[in-house]
Image (tube, rainbow, N blue to C red; front, side, top):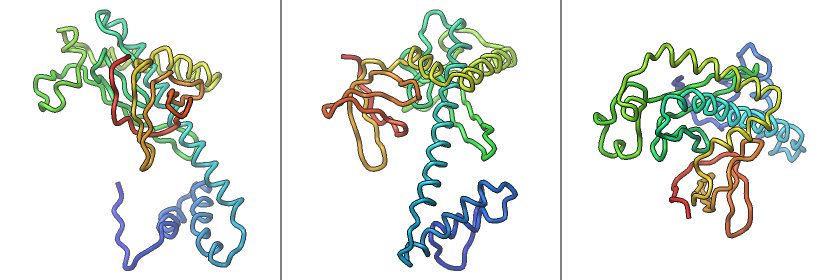
Length: 239
């Protein structure tokens, strides 16, 4: 993380530009330049729509890679742990969690670098026991050890995960739609009532699964809706 101290109040565009102007990779430097100049161009009533659309396109492309990267990692982890827990069903909770039954086993965070590389953060409960967890977590999380009553060699587990991740990322690169379909087959939220918060808005509907492009599909009172980002704030059992 980076802490920056300024002697005055900056606009968000100015802050972005100061952070990005000296970076060697031109994608970020050019993006920072465009963001910085949106304000002055707007004030002079000049047309800035092409630059803004380009920035939004870059942002949406990055979000799509993050979404599908997280799902690829989730698919890989599900394939890794499924043979280890035959008594429980491993699956995906959109957008970036892996569950065993109704308890969370792992969480995933993905960052995408300007050159297209992924930084994947994965936290999985392996040999820790939930008996030591705070009360507010003990009822909603689990670990491989608690489910199977045995410990695992984490090196072996990580090796298998890397093998499965290689397979999933190959599918992502060659046929992204198939990765979406695999994610849907592993989705544990089908038929459940979900409430998704997007910005300041909340939408509730019955989950129809994960679309080929990684979006969450809900059947709502307003009709069928797809969500490409958002925070899951409530999940009810299947009807």
